[in-house]
Image (cartoon, rainbow, N blue to C red; front, top):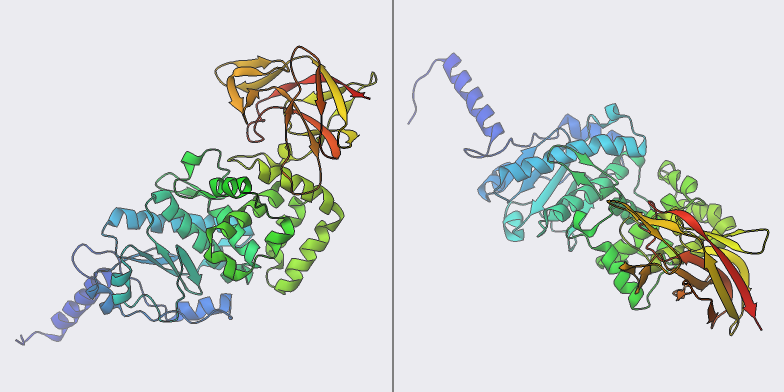
Length: 453
């Protein structure tokens, strides 16, 4: 039924109606995403190589019962009927944008026109009915990023859902502002590495060092690597550099790529070269790969050796610097000094198969520092164990440059200890503790090593 109104009243009513429609699809819905228009053109200037944005029919979205929650840099579409949760994801993305700028050296002002479309889905059919799954979108297990959009499946753990949003957001930020996210291992490894986060409900902190599994429910990359190593399936650094794009249909490739970034970002011989990689993403990916590999070549033997030491004891919070092979101090009297705050330390004594050595040790040190420091001698303390041996016990092994897992042998204690090794390499010593927990140790042991004929 038509009702006669003055032009002014009709115009005001139409304006009010338009504002209400733009604010929500229906009563209680979230702020509706604004059309790109000029903003899409501005985004195109950030990276002209990006594909066009996915067309979205807002009425179709509303009819399918899908919500849209908007922020400055994101329009988040989701079928999850929890406004507070959707708003937290938007707030997290906005907070992350500021940190991506700092991590990659991008001026915050340059992000003004940047706006992503995120699709977070619990019921894929409902999302498809909303027209938010293009026909050419490939199948993916958890998350996928392409141009203006990314898609994420809701996970059982809230942390892992957030991780996936940040993972795909990292891809998008790198592609829009750095020109590319790099070769497969670097692209996925960086997204995994940076998406490790802490969220306090209002702001997010990216690129966090995770010291406990409980901090990352659902992520599980460290546990996966431990399983693969237990099955005798280590990967070399070159293996990781050559992971093909198709390998990322399997979560193993994400775990290896994350470990590669974690190691190279912190090892003393690679960290400066690794830090320069974002600056090279606008160039050829082939050159990106070959130049980085060439820069590492002078240190490749050492990096390879330390990589295998790292992955064979990979853990939450592993200190890469402390896990790398150090050098025990050789004293004037022929003894060696082993520090409690480092992992394996080379004695620079060459070992051949069947060589037999006798070890005698003295001194004490601090291992751990909780309610009070634990003072320890070379026999260790039996209130806590690591790798089947008392915490702090003096251990010996033979280090090689190959992928073989090292075999630690206990040599600490009150009595002299004789050991026969069954492979060639360099003799190394350490106190028995995870490379992830050496930071609060102090002190040293003095060890006499005698080769027996």
